[in-house]
Image 1 (cartoon, one colour):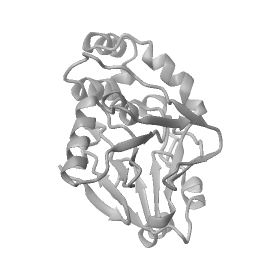
Image 2 (cartoon, rainbow, N blue to C red):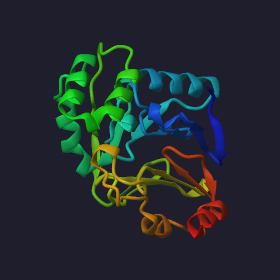
Image 3 (tube, rainbow, N blue to C red):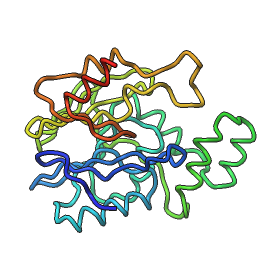
Image 4 (cartoon, helix red, strand yellow):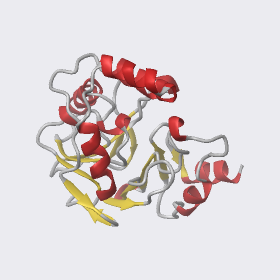
Length: 234
């Protein structure tokens, strides 16, 4: 799989369309001072695929890694990104420290699913993603923010919160007209979801901006502003 150009200096390593694989897209914002990677990939193997695509495209090496939120499929690849500053909202720090302390292995995943069957889809996807646990670690952010942070590359990271994850943040690339949404407007994760939970359309409407042409969610195809407005109107 190769990087797809979205607009300006923004590229996308597409996610897996099979929802059972739980593999989101990962964005790259190219900059001469070092690229910004938005989300780490769902495993070290996934991260290495992205690194290969980055090199093949001739884009600058990664300097910053931004978490849109702390869920495993967006952060488990972080240990495979060397020499990067990891940026994330402060609300994600404690959940990631707790995750880092868990004895991750295929056996542990099976035990957890037996204890709580609602974890099955997520934990089976984790098992499929991980071909080896050697040198694996969950990495909390090394640089945190509370409301908004602008990186030296001009990339802006803004906290939006919401029901999917309390630390959900969006990433704006103003000069490219791209807003990277992560999973912010999605319903809560499946094991926490009730039948009444659905997408947060009010949040999605609130993120519409005439200066943004492309909206990129974690598990969906990028949409233009017109496509996004039409989807929300429907």
